Length: 290
Image 1 (cartoon, rainbow, N blue to C red):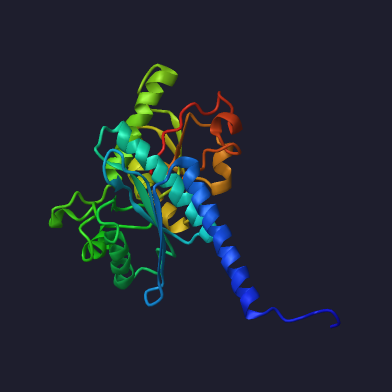
Image 2: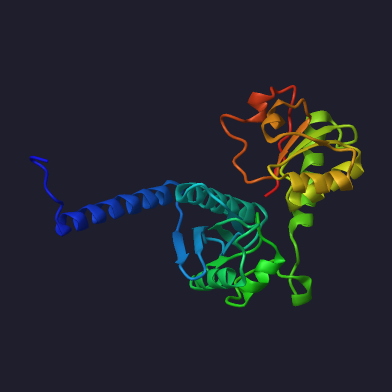
């Protein structure tokens, strides 16, 4: 074509460098927004590992936060999640009076089909490269079994099985904390911490959602449960026949007393805030798990 020319190798190098610089600036800009100290991008071709570790703040001590395995639609989505979660962990640790900071990690992948010992051991080496600035543990898509494999490469991991001297699966304790948070909120909102007869929407049927449902059913609450995985819903329904299963997009239309997001997070936002979507009459509590 008249007037067209081939891009020279030098120009291609300049363009590539410019793109990388823009991407780096974008990441650093996000770090500056909430004062993140460090973001580590992890890649390993042999194992297929693609992960991001974010250290938000280590003022009070090493950054503590679990590792989440999820098939994110994009690296940008994964980065947004890990930076948001790590910042939240800083405040959680501080509010709990712990000598710990906030961190988090995400592994981009399907926890149902892509777990291998080699992948988690490689991830463990990345964790170890931070020399104790970050301590990992379980989160969505992870279990004590993965912590065992990570522990083979680093000592900076929590949530190991009790047989190894660890604390075991943290989900029952997390769910119990959410349950008592609900009771405290009910005391303020309704004048009584009794949840018997209260309608509770639990969004997420993972480990925390499963244990939380059990505590609520025992208390006499009316539970509405939702999740994107039908098999998880079916298992909990079989254990607690009295609960009501609802579709994920129906949870915000429920007339409930308590809304408990126990899924990935960021479900309470400008578009879905139950106090706006439900109206103050329909949902006055939002105790979250995760």
